Length: 245
Image (cartoon, rainbow, N blue to C red):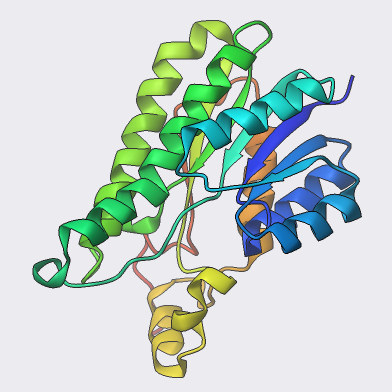
């Protein structure tokens, strides 16, 4: 029987590429996202069940997993691509804005893991969460998103430890700046894009396929000995100093 993955945030820049890659590789999919029209179009294109909703709502996440079970499936993969990019000096950030950042990035990941575990306890599986280069690299005005993504990395490690005996693998991907609709306000600004490109040692911004291919690799049943890892797909930004000499 083909593997079945629940993809939350399937209609985003990375989610769309990932869903198409997985489908082409033989995976069966359950697609989730907030944009009902985009989700319906993607679901029809990939012949996959879908359900629109807000990933901050644990009942919605549970409904996606129930949809997977109803469509005959043993769920062996789950990915949370719901999230946000919130950049603002901490002294100007309201409690409401900070809570919203946590809800969009940390709470959605927490609920995905929470729903995944009961479905994967019998035969194992792979869960992939999204962190950010900002979780480990101090970047100005990233306090809120850095706190949220650092918490996602903690969640990744603790969950991986808790459920390794069930053959459930939990990993995260931590991108640098990737050209997606979510980051368009940054990447469409010529000055910001140029400065960010220079910060990445490989001298380019990320593309959705860079991240999607890493997630697909972590989901693969072949990667049975990889868990509790944060894969930093960031053009070298987190660990290298560029020498353009």
